[in-house]
Length: 85
Image 1: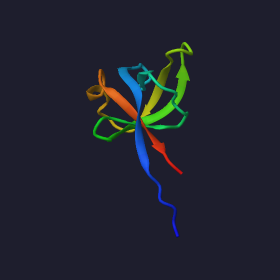
Image 2: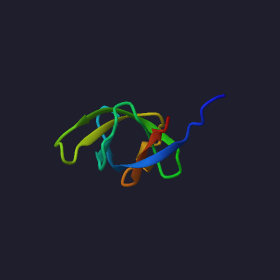
Image 3: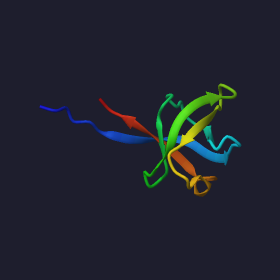
Image 4: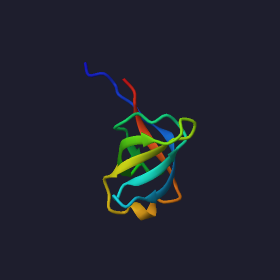
């Protein structure tokens, strides 16, 4: 029997801007595991967490984009997928 896997979303933070290297920068509000998939409120994939940087209390995250429509995300809340095992 195949185990039942449930994915749910957790608030990641606020999308701030697109960097010169074309990565999306977010202000992380929760602990983001490296490599996490970032989605918008409608669960559309935005990108993958590449690195975490900045102050420990409220770090920033650099996201490698999976879409060309990053400008639509700026100023909006983003989430990451948590995979239950």
